Image (cartoon, rainbow, N blue to C red; front, side):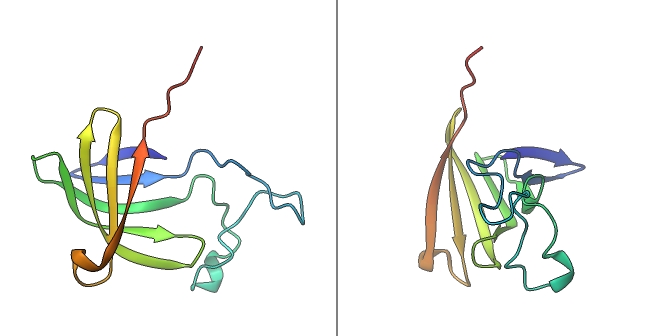
Length: 111
């Protein structure tokens, strides 16, 4: 995932997949579960799955959404920075209490 700032909002796009190609076709994986049929042929690599986040100045980004390509669902989301290399990503419907948090770690590239 690569996070980009565009004007005053933050977005995240997929830049790497463990298995980038569909095992059945050998072609790049696409957003086959998108509820919008016109988006089902869009490659997942490069897909913007975090959208419209606003930084509130407390190590937290709010007001955004996260898209789950496995289910085709979009959820409200809050991102909290735990440290320089760790983000807690909480997706939810309605109330934050009834959501799920995933922890994302910064990739350390050896070179």
